[in-house]
Structure formats: structure tokens, C-alpha cells
Length: 514
Image (cartoon, rainbow, N blue to C red; front, top):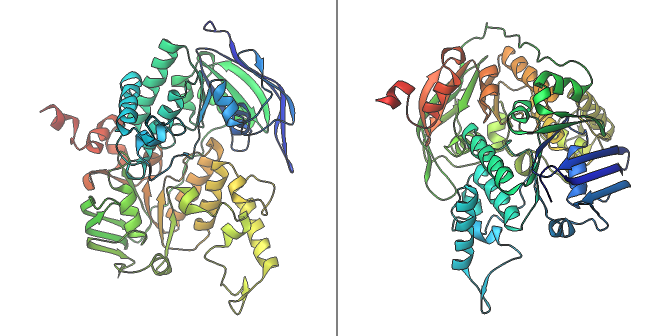
């Protein structure tokens, strides 16, 4: 096919789930050799439409064409055979397998009856050289960063010969540097191979940077398709929500009592491989402030948070919550000291996907007298009323509180986690990646809730891969590199381009130039 010809066509496509019309009469053409961005709020139908293209859902109405041929079988296997690949927001890798084993899965090279590890590794090295996505084929997936895991997913899809590559929230797990590398790869394969790239995203500034055209969805409908060069972020945001969108100013109250609520001294923590991930780190967070941690993913942030919350043992040093040494305490005992925690991976540690919204919202409160009789018999009516109140307050989008949490979009799943943890009246709040995969309206709401907690004298330790988020929310910021603090700043005292030098261990730009 020639560049610019129609590669994918949706014709009056609808997708009805019980109680939800996820896609409503969508007609859309996507061209060969373009980067097409699909944007919209959580629950707008973006992922559902792309899941149809990838064969994971069969539409209840309408038709889909790939390269002019009508899709009659809806399955990932059939989609892959037609040249469609998809990298999901939550990766589908085998953690115990190596990078090469994951990439070659279902297409394993053999030497006689035995798996040919050398041939697999050689194939991956050729893919790495061809596409510029650096990974080591012999590494186990469970031992590499989330950003590297995404590269494995993309290489796996490219190895299968995809002509159409769907990326669902591709930069949600990436640092700014990794995002630039990914965009460079996208530009290269579009220019050299005329591939069609479809990006599902919430980050409008990235839409403006990487896409040729953008489609906007709202409440299941496609409300418009625009050439990216002819719009701006404000226009797209307004199309997404149906009205003009401006991020509300964050109102800060600066009369906190300066009591140190989180104290970390010379902390040492090992990672899952036994290597020292946090090495002599010290920090303090006062009540009524937000301390932001900026760093490239994989530099000890996760292990730091896991140690503070009791999810990983402390190898050396001390951590105190409200003056209490937490070493040797369980996560439950640490929470009882007055700590709430929004984890970085909502799917594995934030929610129970197989439980409904109500059960997820009540976790940690189920033994309170208002919700149980003698801590044994559950008061289901009271629990449901509470869940419905929180459901409305945090604007969780779903069919209702009986909806299985695993059936929610990623952003709404995040709202469930935030709603539960913010509803605890605790003096200490540990937050990792609070708005990863969350739409612009929900992001502003979560930011407002974080500052409200801060204004209520909560001590907040915030880890985010989004520098804009850290600059907006933090009272102070520290940079972390290889498990050590490399700098401390007030957000208005340093530019983002300058802070990146501290994030890579090089010190300031002036020091790096010496």
C-alpha cells in the first residue's frame, strides 16, 4: 500500500456492554504511514475501539476493515495475522522468562527438539540494532524496569511483523528521556517503513509533539478528527470534556506546624536481586508539606517507598513514622501508625481486580463499628451507602459500585485507589504515580485532593515520573540517582532542563560542563 492510503476503517462501529454503550456509531479512517492519536477522558471508549481492532472484542454493530479487507474473525491471533499489534497499558509478559524468551514466545527457535537460546538472543540483538530499543536479551523480565518491559512488548510486536502498531498509554510508565527515545523510534519506523502508529493517550502535549492527526472521543462517540498542526492542547481538552478546560489554581495554606512526620536516616534497601537499590538515603517530610522525588525510574524510588510502607525489608538505617521506628513492623502495623499509601502499580498492589468497587473502597475500614457488628458480621447496607458516597465524591466512572474493579478503565481504577486511601484520616500519605493513565479532568481533581490533604497538615511523600506534576504539587523536591539523594530544591528555583542533570547523577549543568 502507498503512504497516505487508508489502512484501517471503522464503519458505524458500536460496542454494547451490559449497562454501558462503550462505542456509539464510530466511523473513522486511519492512514498508512501516519501517527494517529486517539484521546478522550476515561471511559470515552478509546481502548474499547482499539481492542476491537486487535480482535479482543467483537463489535455489536458496524464493520471494521484492515487494508481494505473486512474483519470477519475477531481474535488477537487473527489481528496479528493481518498485521495488527497492540502494546497494552498493563503488559502481558512472563516475568520469569528472559527478554528473548518473551519476544520469541510462540515463535521459538529450535535446535532439534531443544530451545535454541543463542538463535533467540541473536534475533533480539538484530531487532535492537534495527529499531534502537535497547534491551539485553538475557535479562529476566522480572528484574528489569517498567520502561524496559515496555520496550520488550514493542519489540515482541514488531517481531511479529506488525504494519499497524497500537500503543495504549505508551508514555505512562516512561521517564522524559525514555519518552524521547520512544518518539525517536516511532518517527524512524514511520519514515522508513511507513508503519501506521495509533497512540491512545491522555498527555496532550505529547499528542502535539508526535502525532499527524488526532481523533477525540467523548462518551463513546467520535466527536472530531483534526490535523494536529491545526489545533492546540486547549482545543483538544475542550473537545474531550465538551466545555472549555482550564486547570484550576491550587490554593495552598502555609500555616503547617513543621513537625517531622516522616524521617528516613541513612536508609539501605536491597532490590529483588539482592543489590543495594537504596544506599545511604536520608530525608525528612514535615506535616503540611509535599516532598516530591524526581528521578529516572529504576533508581531506588520503588524500593524506598516499599521500605517505608513495610512491603520490603530494611537492610540498614532507620525509618520513623510519627516518631515511631517502623523496622520489623508489618504493613498493617505501619498503617496503624497513621499512614495511607497510593502504590505505583494499581493493578498488582492497589486493587483487587476480581472484587467489586464497594469491596475495594471498604478495605481497611471493614472492622469499624459502623460497618460491622462485633467485627464479624458485615453491615452491607451501611457499607454500600459509604461506597456510593465515595463513588460520587471521586467521580468514579462505571455502571455502579457493584462493577468489578477489573472492568474499569485504568484511570477509573486509579480513582478507586486514590478514593480509598484519601478517605483515611491519616497524618502521613505516601503517593507513587498518582495520575498515571488518568485523564486531564481526573488529574486536576486528584491534584486538588492532594493539596487539600497537604493543607490539612498531612505530610506527603510524592514520587512521580511526571516532572510537570512534581513542579505543580511539591513544596520541596529532591532528586534521586542510584539510590542516593543528589540534590534538594524549591520548585521555583530550578528549571526542568537543569534538574535533569541531578536526576542522571551529573550534578548541575555547570558541574557537568567542567
